[in-house]
Each structure stands twice: as C-alpha cells, then as structure tokens.
Image 1: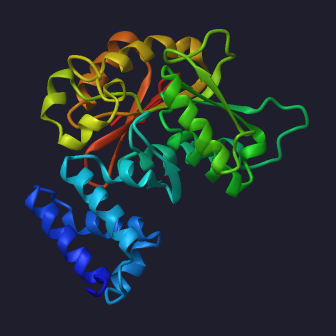
Image 2 (image 1 turned 180 degrees about the vertical axis):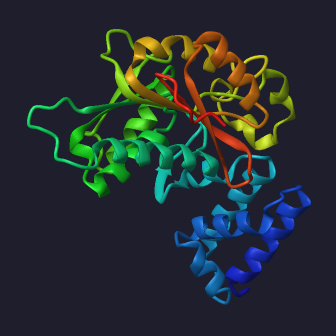
Length: 306
C-alpha cells in the first residue's frame, strides 16, 4: 500500500504544472487551490507541508489544477474573491472584483463620511442617497455599506445598486445577504439608472471600460468572465459617455460621481466631460501603480481639477 502524498509534494506538483502552462502566479495559485481542495486556509498549506493529503482532496486538486491550466480564474474555481477585507461569492455571472477598485470604495466612504460627519442630522432629514451603477457581484455596494456600518453612518444613507444583468444582480443579492446587508441595499435591474428615482447625492460606477478591440488580447482568464462586464465600446468609454448625459438629472445640485476608468482614459474622459457637461469639475485619483483610476465629477464646478 502506497503512502499518501504530502501536502508539500502536491503543492510542488501543482506549481510545476501551472508554471508549464504559463501561469505568472503559479505558486500563489497552487497554494490557493491546494488549500481549497483540503478545505483549509492557505496559511495552513504553507505552514504544514508534511501533512498527508487525503485521497479525496488529491482528486479534487487534480480537477482544480486542470481547470486553472485551461485558463479558468482561481476565483471562479474557489468560488470566492477577497475584496476590501470581505469575501465575495463569485462565478461566471459577473466580473471578478479587482484590487484597484478598492480605491473607488475608499473614496466613496470618504465622501459619505465627510457629508455626514459633524452636527447630528435633524430628525426627519432626508437620507444621503447613493447609487452604485453596474454593481456586478455587488462588491462596491456591499463593501461601501459594510464600511459605513462600521462607522455608524449606514442608518443615514439610502443605497441603491443597479445592473443590466439579472444574473449579476442575483449574485449581488447573495453577497449582500451573506454579509448581513440585504436590508441596507436596494437592488434594481436597469440599463445604467432606473427611471423615476429621486436625485442622488453620490453616484459610483465601475462600468465596462476595455476597448472592444482589446478584448481578444486580454489574458485567457478574462475569456471566462462575461463580455458584457468588460466591453466598453470602441474606445472604452461608450457607457461612461451615456452616463455623463444622465448626471444632471441623476444628481442633486452639489452632488458628485466617482467613476473607475482604464489606463489611458483620463484625457478622453476629460474631453467627453467638457463636451457633455461644460463647467463640471474633474479630479483624478491614482491607483497604487500610479495610473489615474478614479475620476470624480462634481456639479457645480470646483477648482479641484488636476
């Protein structure tokens, strides 16, 4: 009878297979998949390579590694992705949340906190209205609501999340339920914004911004994600331009919008803003790689453009 393989040996084999397939993150991917196969945290795999790998876990691992070799994202294989300190259920119904989108959440939290901090709001005051346009798996809306709950601001807000995809909305609702925020967020299926909603104080959007011609050149993992969540039209800003035209009616005077954009899209966005909404203010915020990642649009104009 052959002894069971160890966790360390299985990990080394998975790393070798993934490297041979061209994975740029073979070690990390392998650690995550071995941990998922066993049902433990990744740290346990790293700390205890000598532990035997049970045969059922070994069989699961073979399947997981095979899927990753074929290009499927690790997040879809595990069914979970960490974002803004929270674990989100993810699958092919929606885009996998990216780390750079955490900046959008951070800026949103800062804007809400700045508006609600200070003297107590008078009884009967209208709630601070927020909309997350194109919510996908709900990462931005849920992370924002969770952060506001920790800071004691959630009760003073009204938060709506929209998406054109019914499948994505269903996943977003699942994530809101999983984090105990189902009662704090309203969900609506809409092409950008639903009709007949009162104006908002703050709009956040991480809309598709990959130029259509760039889609075939994306890493193979992106081919497993819904094209609807990636394709931003000829220059990546088709949906953003449509949203710009809606902002005067969608926002209260003095309100603002935070939009995530792709690399190289800051100046085209500036031109589109000044053409569509002359006089509006624009500020750009860089991600950790130094790329302008979030554009803040304000009405009326401010002196914050840079």
